[in-house]
Amino acid sequence: MDTIARDTTTSILHLPDDCLYFIFQRLESVFDRKSFGLTCHRWLFIENTSRRSLQFPCSFRHLHRTSLSRTSSTVGSFQLYTMLDRFQHLELLCLSGCVHLPDSGLSQLQYYGSKLQTLYLDCSDDGLSVVASGCRSLKCISLYRCNVSSIGIEALAKSCRALEEVNLSYCPLITDTGIRALSQNCHQLRAVRISSCRNITGVGFHGCPRTFVYLEADSCKLETEGITEIVSGGGLEYLNISNLNWAVPGNGLTIVGAGFAKRLKLLDFRLCRTVTDESIIAISRGCPLLQEWNLALCHEVKRPGWESIGLSCHKLERLHVKRCRCLCDRGLQALREGCRNLLILYVTRCRQLSDPAIMIFKCLRGDVKIIEEEVMCIAPEWAFSG
Amino acid sequence: MKKLKFIGNPLLQSREKINMSSDKKWLTLKTTEDNEEFVVEESVAIMSNVIKNMVEDGCASSVIPVPRVKGNAMGKIIEFCKKHTEESDEKVLKEFDAEFLNLGPDALYDLMVSANFLEIKVLLDSVTTKVADMIKGKSSEEIRNILKIENDLSAEEIEESRRENCWTRQE
Image (cartoon, rainbow over all chains, first blue to last red; front, side):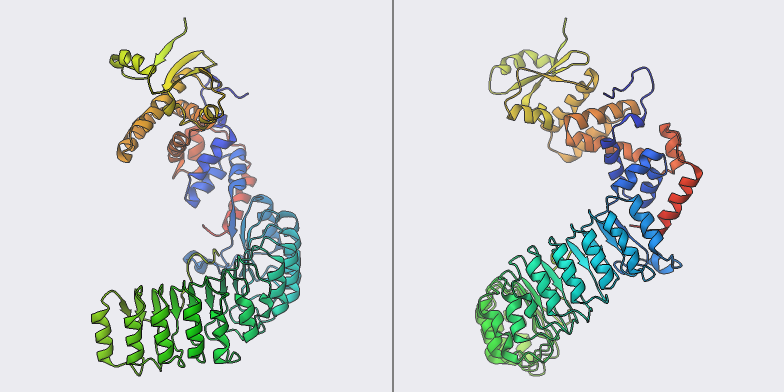
């Protein structure tokens, strides 16, 4: 048992490792942590084993002024190996932007990746299958702009069943097959991003779990059956299908209000130029928890649609109606007389709205803030950790 | 003869003796290294998670033996816990802690080890912060000088480590 000797000076080295870890954790600055590590072997060990996340200056994830001015220190297989060997308790690793790292370099993750929970990659299917076999504890993965196809996603989904968050934005090769693999193997799936994935129709979301709450699917070519499957899990709270391709006929979105999406709180239909009143009415009745709805540039929404929103969207707090060609004074009146919980109305350049109508709105609904600046993204902070 | 310490105002000792038989529960903690005994209120003693668990599990008898902690450290710990139980004003507690931790490194390390062993989070947090403050802003060499740590890293190892540090992003 370690007793502190009374006849010699007590040294900090007599402290057990536990205490040294506590002290290390109190050091917040990079400078202090590195000084700690370079003091002696034991403290270097504590620094190395305390490190939970690793990013390289070239990573896209957070742009930092130092990374912009730094001459590109290329991250290759050797650098990665050295880092993984030194920091063996990593939970987050960011390799996105490491363009000099070949897929073969990722093979080291088979030995060192078992504790990783969050991974940002820049790879193809080969790299992904290696990652899949080595990093079975993965909860969050980003394959932003990667050259991966459904084959890679299938391998990933079958191996990393604890996956909760998947970012597949701008991965043009992925199809519904890959999405299906995720929906059916990852029972904790929570958040998915498929922005600009033009080969996904949405049918792959068939069988998605109730834990699936967040979908970012802007600029996609979804189909009506796809929309049906997307809401089928019953747990969706945030849905972004802005800039939806014209393949979905206007009333194809009616299914969102059919009862499966009862928990929807935020809905982004920006630039869904064909969404009809029928869909609006169904959704305003079928999604009672709706708090924010972006209908900017939804030119087909007319008076019946606005009246339905006023009448049925009791919890609506923020509504975006910028440049809606068919929002007329009567429509605005309906919103004014309904939507008791409205806090913010984003409105500008609506051709059919007259100035007096807007003045009346401001007078009678002083509780609602009118904002003219356009908001492009209504994604909540809680949705995606990465 | 064993020393029996009452933690409290000596002028109120007689009143405390009367109170001992009323609603407040009292525990006796005995440091086994030097056989010092401390009588404390249960509400103060259970700031230690270890003692709290013993009390909740019903294992605490009238005298609780406490190994590894010396008498003078125990006394200081009880003083700390008592203050933190009685006082709720954050500002007052902060001033108290600053004064309380105005100790030499030896005493600080003793306190840290004891607080860790007894699982007293508030005390452990305060002491580790104080020790960390001693290190902040200092280079490795300065840390070694102040804390009398021998440098067992070779020049090569230091250089390698520095080079690797440059590869990673500043977080």
